[in-house]
Image (tube, rainbow, N blue to C red; front, side, top):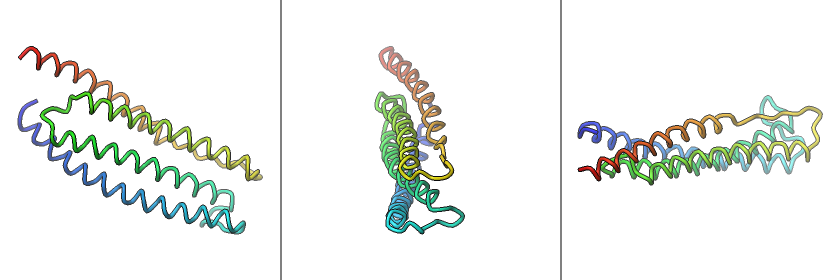
Amino acid sequence: MDEESLVRLRRICGIGSWIAVIVSIFMALLLVSSAVNLSRCSLDPEFCLPMMNHVQSCLSSMEDLLMGAFGIILCVIAYRLLRNNGDGYTPFTRENVTGMKTIATVAIIGFAIILCAQIFMIVVMDPDEWWIDFPMSLVILAVITYVFALLMEYGTVLQTESDHFL
């Protein structure tokens, strides 16, 4: 990797780490808003979000709450990855591979938990119609991140061989 590319990578990682902080703040606001809506749903059987009935409002608020929680976790991991890349001499490190695999794992776990929570709430609330919103964005994130983690892992092996050769 030439020096200019490394400088550009460090600059982009620095900007990306600040973006991760800002997105974390928005996720925290989503978390609070969803918690308020979910508590209103549980206390008032007539409460509805715009364009939804009561059951849909409860399910949507619960999904947003979990999505906000997993979003914050993913942003924290991304922040650490970007900070490490902003300081290191190469992006091909074992820590980066582990961080990317962690993002993929958290995304898949988030998908499973959100889906299970939706099914649980549907069973508990026994609505007339079922309304499940598959959080496919988490599956897509997990697959893409895992593939890039494998690429980074291969790059790490090549970097190690190059370092030992020199």
